[in-house]
Amino acid sequence: MSLPAPRALPDATASVAGRSAFIVAMLMLAASMAQPDAARALPRSAQPATLTLFAKPFYRGNSVTYTMDEGDVRPGFGPHSVKAVGRWLVCSEPRFKGRCIELAADYPVDAALGLNFNIRSVRGLQAGSGAAVPPPGVAPGGPSLAGTNARFFAAPRFGGERALACPSGAPEVRCAKRTAEDLCRRAGYRSATNFILESERGLYYLADLLCTRP
Image (cartoon, rainbow, N blue to C red; front, side, top):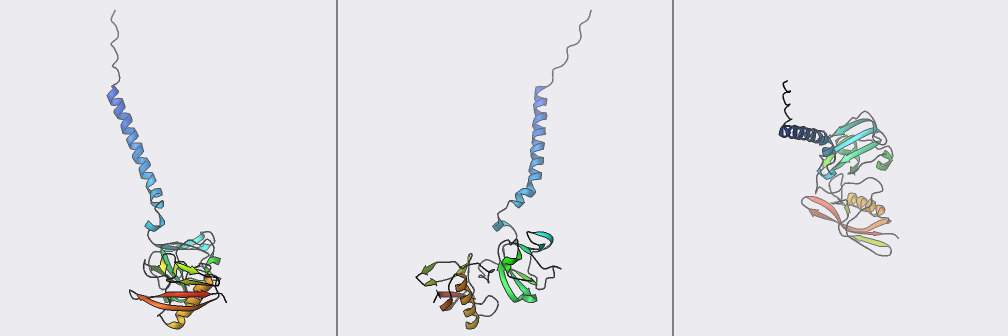
C-alpha cells in the first residue's frame, strides 16, 4: 500500500510579498483619491486669485468665476453672494468707473456690499498696491493714538494695505478729503480735521489723519 505524496507547504515569502504589494497598491490608490482634497485644503493665501459671483444668497444658483481683469463683465444676473480669493476691485460700471469697492473675503449675502450693488468690471489687486474703498462697515486699522474725542492715524490701513488717498482716480485734495471723511466715519468719528497726502513708489496714501467727534 503506497502512501499519498506529501502536499507542498505554501511559500511564506511569496505570501508576505503578495500582501505587501496589495497594501502598497491600496495606499497609492488612497493617496491619488486624496489629492483633490489636499488641493482644496491649501490656505487661502496660497490659492490662485479668483472672484466668483453667485445669483442667489449663500453661494447658490448660477455662478461665474473670474481669474483676471475684466473691463466689461456681463454675468447675466445680479450677484447676491460673492467668494473672493485674493484682493479684487469691483466697480458698478464698465472700465472701472462708477462706485468701486475692494473685496478680499466671502460675502454670503449682497447686503454687505451695499444696496443694489451691480458688478460690471473686476480687477485683481496686487500686494503693495494700496487699499481701495472696502465694503460698508469695515473699520480702518493701523497704529493710532486715541484721546477723549479724537483719534490720530499716522498711516491708516485697511487689512494689510495702506489707505489710498483717491482709490478711484488721480490724487487731488477734494478726493482725498472725501476719503478721509469716510475713513473717520468708519472709525466712529464725525469728521476729518487734518490729513496729508504721502507719496510712496508712485502711489499717494492718506497720512497724519486726525478724526474728531465734535
